[in-house]
Image (cartoon, rainbow, N blue to C red; front, side, top):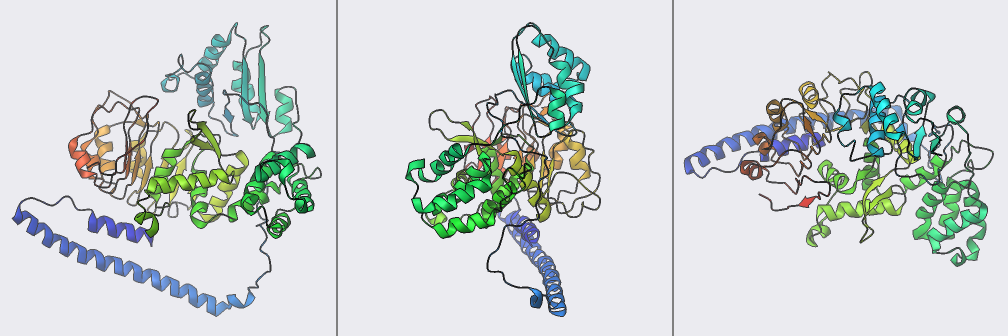
Length: 546
């Protein structure tokens, strides 16, 4: 249904600005009336088809008497189907700035380039654009670390292979008393890499300090009548900090209702203790917090499964994407109070922060306001599974999925571009330096609302401008830090001005120096333009830009 509404709005309201000549204005008006009549007829046919399908579903329900076999339970427990995908979850303490995610099928070149960049961001600022192979990258790392004393943290290794073929070869032994810390969830990998230290759960006293402190401000302030139920909840949390933080956030606004505490305690199971090192019921606690969210916050949270593991998500980028997707709704009261979409989106963001479902990052030194967020690995794992169940975000394409994909996120540079059409695709996000023209040429992008190309390589800008200019539904176009294969460009393609529904345009940290006036004139709904070329670039809200 939303696809039909979008198509109707584009075809009816997507016409250009009115002509100043009366004759042309009259002809355009008459043409518009005919077009609107045809569009309304087409939309009516599609809605009629949807009604027929709904009636067919209702008939099947009546025919098979589905209502008769449904019973109403007194209590709705948390969905127990979700099981842990990981062998063990460890809470590492003291992880420093330099860390790198190592996944099961790693991109070894990217891994080594990222490691070099984090070792010296100034010296290796252009390392990602080089064509060095693994051997040369390893040699570069050995050369840089020679005769240096260092502490390096490698976070979340999933397999022995990346250590044997890349990381271990780069970190040479020396007599400088250097240290390497690695974290993993797999005991075999830990023992293979080096000495294994198993992190312990929090003690009972530390658990109480964390749990009560987050709810009541201090361990000494909690009501004594909550003592028994609190002990039960803490036992089920099993000394896992994330479990306690998530549960305490859920109970923070219900600190005087012991019945609610008992219901929460009954819902989260009891599998986090010593007898279950896998901590499967940790997911039950997270599910309880998820199901307690309002529907719009559930959608916004699930949307975060678009981003890769250990990815730092810019708050402004996320909120403007929420707005473009239509997740941020401005009710009548907000409209009367002149509360902007951006302010409403910030409220959504803060609500997820307060519930500890996302973690703050890049804190503003002056005001202490987070400029970004990140996800705990287990939370991301849960969101990915929920997204699969809801047919929401797609990160890996399977057979027969092309007709169903609506939100596509591509993480690995080893991914082969899909050649099939995706008629329902609404969002495309790319996290690796792909050649974008190849994708847009093959995909059917008629309904695309969000196109995020951060860090991608552009080839054939003229043809690419025509492709992007034809995305009539587009609300968000993100192209920060994009690069060209050949030459340079300092002017935005004029075809961008055809995107009459575009709300956000991000061309920061690119070679673009000029935005033609014809482009700005055509972007009648633009709310955010980000164009500053340096690291401290900020998002600029321009509600009356044209």
